[in-house]
Each structure stands twice: as structure tokens, then as C-alpha cells.
Image (tube, rainbow, N blue to C red; front, side):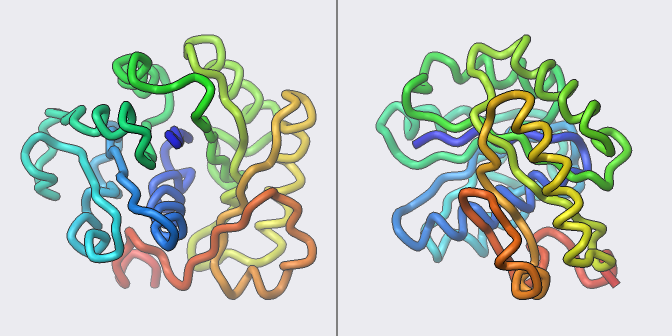
Length: 221
């Protein structure tokens, strides 16, 4: 299965990608294709060494995933894994730049065997309303050969997040789902919040995490 994940800067897309891979690696090896050259601060390649022992490989820069390497020299070696039918999650930057990168993958992706997920965080200015979320989805579908297949609720304010934030974002994303006839595929949230509202989450799948993967203590305190 090939999963493509996109979202506006600050949506928590890459955090979701890493935790999604961790969950899937419990059943089979997973490769993350880190194509996000837009945001150099939080990249899945930063977790490559820690993820390898649990069956997750990260492919990004041709410079062997050097975390300090900001040269946009991407490796598309992961395309061979897609063609072989292996599990690959593409961490795609949002916007036109991301779709240009995705165009290089069309020949390898089976249009009958993929997911294209949009991650939304209601608490980012670019996606703080149903209308803005809709606009983003429409822009992606207008320029991509592979349409979006599902949405992700990642409503959060980092360490200020409450269970109500998650539910309010869920409400907004569900309205987008209804207008576009798409499923709410995933809810991504910290374990503490999940225990408070488990019976109120209505996405098809839930990804929980104990603590953020891509932020250091000084960034969340």
C-alpha cells in the first residue's frame, strides 16, 4: 500500500507520518519517503536511526539522511519499493511544490492501491475554518492526478492541547468530509486526550502517541 500524506506547514503532518509508520510497523516493514523540502525543521529523516530497529526505513536526501543537510537533493529510490508493492508512506509538503514532487511518483503508484490523506489542524491560521480546509482540498484535487481519499484530524496546540481541541477540530473536519464525500480516516492525538474522549472519536482509525516524536523538551515546555 502507498499512502501519501500532505498538509499545510504546521499541521503536524510529519508527526502524524512517523506515528502512523510506528503503528503499521507492528505488522509489516514500512518505508517513509521524506519529500518535505519546504520545512527544514521537523523532518521524518531526523528519526531514521531510531526507527530502523522497529522495521521502519526513512528515505529522503541523497546525502544519506544527514539531518543537518538542507540541500534539496532528494532520493527517489523509494519508488522501487512502491513498484514492488511494499508499504510506503510519502511525507509530502503542502501546496504546489509538493504536488510537483508527487508528479514524479505517478508512474510507480497503482491508482487502485493508494491512500491520499490530508492532515488538518484547526488551530493553524491557514486552516482555521471549514472554508479554508475545503479550499486546500480543492486545490490539491485540481492539480493532482491522484485525488484525496481521506482526511486526518490532528487538532492540537502542542502542550496546551485539551480533549476539547481535538473534538472541535473533529467537528470542522467532518463538515469538510461531508461536503467532499470523503471519510474521516484518522484521528491523531496524545494518549492522555484519547482516554478522555475515546467514546466521542468517530474516525475510522485512531493513532495515539505518548509524546511528540519530532520536538525536543525545550520546544514543548
